[in-house]
Each structure stands twice: as structure tokens, then as C-alpha cells.
Image 1 (cartoon, rainbow, N blue to C red):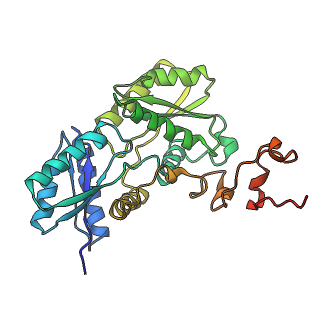
Image 2: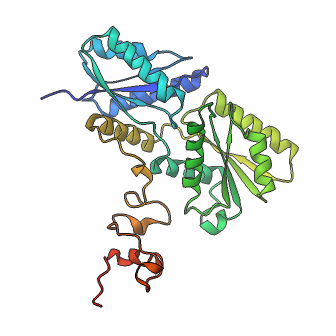
Image 3: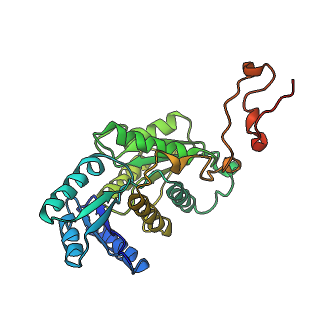
Length: 309
């Protein structure tokens, strides 16, 4: 029987010891859950172990084939450039190894569900229905990047989090390198009429940047006592995250790298759109196509049109 390709987890790296330890714990937990699979993880920068050490460790165990998964929510410079460059370097260092490269994690429905849980926790479990949520505005705060595409991905996550969940709105801000920053994001929420705001860090694990988000939120709240502001927690090492990493691994191994099917209403049950899953795809009819159909009629029951004129 052939051994499956090893799972190599690539992390961003942090100066925060607790954040780095959270990553290492997460990698160990993946290894425990999949004893038949060689698993190792390393960082691009700032914290040990470096990615090269993780590769060397696996090569010493006889591994020749790797699937690398970036433990990152958005595809910025690290996922697009630094990790592929690091992997290319390892290939030179260890002739005979081969690897495939998986996709970043977000914005996956499983992670959106965890974010929704974090919001519920921050609101003390008092907000149970879409009606309760109608006066809650969420400020989703991403890492921030010099890459516009990476920043746009955070907006995509914010939009998907808003869809079908009943919050008054989900606004977006960044903790570094991109505007709006956290205080400007909070000002924007107020300008839009927000009554209760929950600041939600779009980060996997604890670290210096999520701490900064919380400090800036508390600083702003102290200066604006008339607005209720709460801070939610980071995503954390949830079962959904462990499962999602394995999903990205499987995709990389099978070469099943899809466009945006993670968040496609016809494949995935998204809040408020559950009836769309598995619907056959129909040509799009407009009222003037045959003179008698209203827009959208073709979805009902998923049947094709047949007319005996």
C-alpha cells in the first residue's frame, strides 16, 4: 500500500509565544487525529520551528511526497509568494521530494459558523433569533495587507457572514497596512446608525495583532460610552478548523482545486438559502424571453420549462 502524502502545515508566525504555541498544539492535534498520516508544521517567519525544519523532520521519517496547506485565512503575500518560494528551496535541499500546494482556509462556511458562535458568545447568548440580531452591527477585523486582493477577501468573508444571519450589518476594518483601521471602522458603524457593535477578529489564533484589536476597541469604547461595544474571541482550534485543514489537504492531494465552490449556494447550505442545495441548474429566463414568465420562476421545484404551444 502506498503511503499518503505527508501533511505539511505552513503558518505565518508571530512574536506572541501563546500564539506560536497554539499553532504547534494544533499541528500536534492533527497528528493525533490522523495517526496514519505524517504531519508536521512550521512558520514562514518570527517563531520556531521554521518551515524548513518541519520538512527536514518529515524527510528523515522517509517522506517523499508532501501536500502543503497554508494555515491562513486569506491569500496574501505569504500564501502567494513566501510559502511556494520556501517549498521550492526545500525541493533543492532535498532532491527527490515532490509536493502539491493547498488553498488558504477562508471564507469557508464552517469558519463562518465558528465566527457566528463567537458573536453569540460575545453577546452572552442573549441574541438567539434574527429579530434579536437586527440591532447588532459586526465589525470584522482582518490582519490587513498591502495586497488589495487579500483585503478584498476579508470583505468577502464579511458579506458571507452577513448573508442570511440577520445582523444589522457586517462592516470591515484592518489592524495594519490597510484602511479603515479599527477606530475608523467603529466610527463608520456609528455613522451607519449602529446601536450595539461587536468587534470580531478575523484571526485563527491569539497573538499580538488580535490583542491590538481588543486594545483599540477598548480605547474607542472608553471614549464613546454612549455606544455598546463588545469584543469577540478569535476562531481558535475548533473541530471545524481541524476538519477544514483536512479538506484542504484532500483537495491538494486529489488536485481538486475549485474556484469558489466553498461558498456556492448550490453545493453548501448557507443560512437562508438551504433550499438551493443540489438544485439542477437552469437557463436563466427573463420576462421577455418568452413573454410570460416572471424573473426567477425557473427555480421553483427545479423543473425545466416545457411548453406545448
